[in-house]
Length: 151
Image (tube, rainbow, N blue to C red):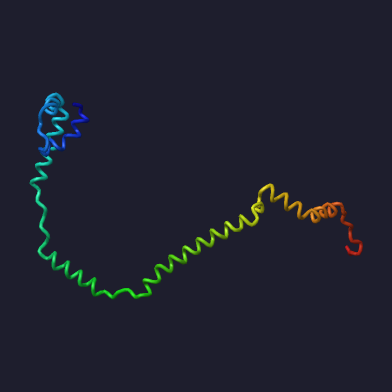
């Protein structure tokens, strides 16, 4: 028997459910660590058997009944409180669903119009070709000094 197998059987040995005999006894004779561990577990079990649960105070029942009576006498919540909680949850759920659906609708309506992509940049250049070509004309114009201005 190994120490691992002994640790599995040790709680039953300590409680007396399994007798210490055969392989168990032989292992305990040769392994001082397991023998000490079994002795410690048996002492712990003996202490737990002697332990008595403390009695509740004599006024425990009186205080408990008084507290229960106080809770019963509290004003019950109005019917509006029962409606308000589910209504708030419903509104929050609808807002989340609406925002998700709007996001999905926008992405499906114009999937290549997301800003910053190469495709959208090329589309913008193609749409505004006339406007951009006039910028070149403006660059070619030279500014003429105004001769009517008085120095």
